[in-house]
Amino acid sequence: MTISRRSLFRGMLTVAATAGVCGPDRVPTALAQTTLSPEAALGQLMDGNRRFAEGRMTSFAEDLELLKAKTAEGQEPFAAVLSCADSRVPVELIFDQSIGHLFVARVAGNIATSAMIASLEYGVAVLGTKAIMVLGHANCGAVKASIEAKAVPGQISALYPYIRPAVDQAGPDLEAAIKANAKIQAALLRQSSPVIAEHIKQKQLEVVAGYYDLASGAVALIDR
Image 1 (spheres, rainbow, N blue to C red):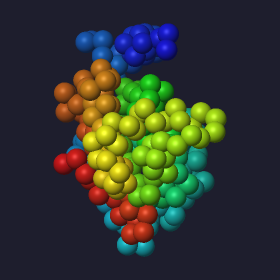
Image 2 (image 1 turned 30 degrees about the horizontal axis):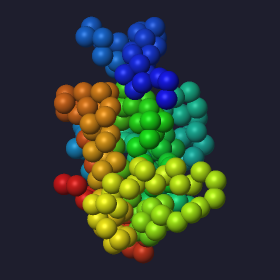
Image 3 (image 1 turned 90 degrees about the vertical axis):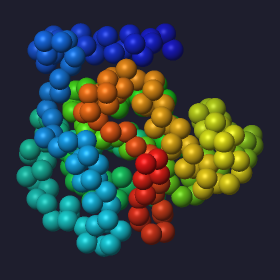
């Protein structure tokens, strides 16, 4: 990359200042922000998953026309999720959330690439999300492919270097590697982003790793 993450952060600060959303300490404040604490945001996320797993969802009962009208000009997501692109992991559904509630970044293997980190930084610094979950899931094809490390078409193998540390740590055990990968990517978010690290330091954000069981529908926190 020709633009460093630090340069990107400085650019975000400049944009925020121009828009008049910087506080006296020059740290950007969110344009729109949930009133939930990081702990409450994570709790709301997990409560929604329990409703989903138990088959008693409430999000479908919300007035979609009203939701669309309220969110057409802005958004106030209370949490962000870095999820795999797998079609079996519909993030809003498994957390029983509707329009405007979650800020979702999806990529095969739920890996913390520069683009994914930048997206989540925006969610934290501008939108005010209070929790980030890196969500691994059962039978993840990207992790399985990284374990097998076979020749693949196109650019699929570009995923391997991001997932390989988890494979090195967990070995050929697919579930263990998936969980290790989610933990490693969550740690990368905490450590490699000055935006995220500062919000964690100020107790304005929690970053956790989760594991979604495709069969039961339940999400478990795996790094607490």
